[in-house]
Image 1: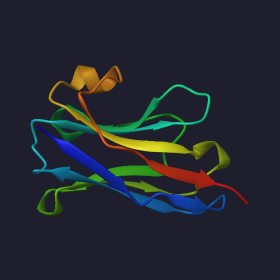
Image 2: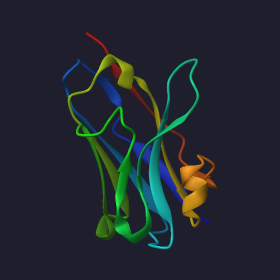
Image 3: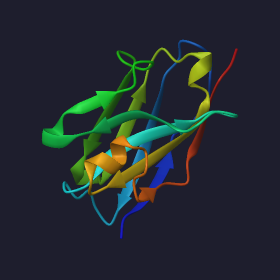
Image 4: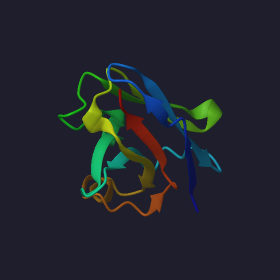
Length: 122
């Protein structure tokens, strides 16, 4: 059983930065594919960034060049560094995991965190 807990959300002005953290319990198992999703009010949940096979990383077109997914196995933590934030990045951000990469790609991983709110406003 995997448990995920996000933190690091908050309010920031456009152009600002935030780093989200996802603590993975009991530990980061490299057999699991980790990902970040987000859901804005009135919109469907969408994938933002993910680790895929062979350790490669994928990003939504809307965040490429601005967001970076990373992990520190020694801290059991997955990160999402978000730079040059825009109004449209406002959403609840979720950490997610699954043993099957196709489920992450399809947006139906088995394990989800509770979410952390990111608000970009002036």
